[in-house]
Length: 435
Ligand code: F0G
Image 1 (cartoon, helix red, strand yellow):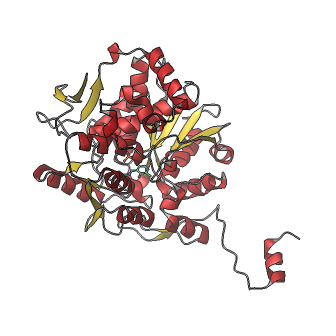
Image 2 (cartoon, rainbow, N blue to C red):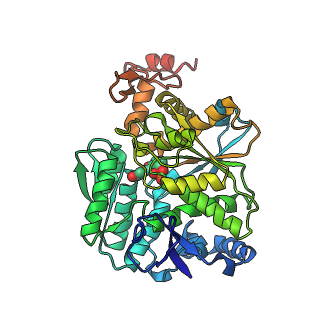
Image 3 (cartoon, rainbow, N blue to C red):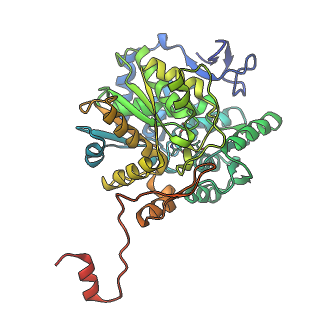
């Protein structure tokens, strides 16, 4: 039996109801399972057996673990065979951070280039179960790209609310190509988020932001897939970027359910990293406060996480508490350099993902992470999502203007600058520096 349980007042609601928050107290909702009726060992054996299956839902890195997802008729699942993203050794990044070894799990290798696909397959499937014909989200770009693709697959109309001029072009181009109605709002992400919630309350659209608990169910499977890839051996720590705080919450929930099932015997530490100009969780954590104080305006060139009023912060705090986790905050310069170093490993990522490496480096330097720890960094978006940022870094033209401050040009310490050469063989050979 699956239900929707309120985080605040613990009331249970039916998963067949169209709810985003608790109708009684407005608390956040979780999908809750009768885990006591499941056997961990049997589940692991079943999930292992599906690795050689040829059916789409077994090959999906989300639906392979469907015993821990809301019940769904298998023929109504909307999947792009998401997940199955690799774990890679990142030796240059490890050296940069001061670790003996670093593993990255690159969720940017999903069908639309970000981790959002893991949650969108479950979100759109639930939309279909509820009979929705139109879906909507506010987005810094990746949610909109993913929702647009999955809605197109399901034959649903989709509406994306995006902050005007503040999302990376790769993401906007995807939403357009997949046929979403793109509404550019004169405001920031936090305005778009507030407005889409108001619109969802008055119209039949189904809201697919990560406040929707069905999104987080898909995203939590990242934790299960990662363990399966590691032969069920836990890392010491998982490091993840924090924006609206859905993903870190989902990953913690995934590990916690495995703990309750006896599949693992402890939680890995979860470390959330935020950009300095958009770090309300970090400030809350440092202050030991009970409530999050929004930041307005939020600011960072890592536009995916340019969020000042994250909706899922109570879930993020729960995940941090149950995993003895921590929160770090990094500067624009630290993000830009870390991104180039991840690129030098032949991996690459979008700016928001690079906060992980920047945060790990900072924590190793301060003694918060020991060099021998087994750390997995979660990369959330593909390097091609935001080519402007990358090219500007390598050209030495990456500018950042903090709110109310002067424009800075970030240093391009790890730049791989263009070389301008005349159309002449000798000049080329000379420039190539090979002889
Ligand atoms: N990394 C990337 C690439 C993202 O797109 C996001 C969020 C995050 C990290 C942060 O994840 O919000 O779960 O804490 N992007 C959202 C969007 C907000 O609209 O695409 P989070």
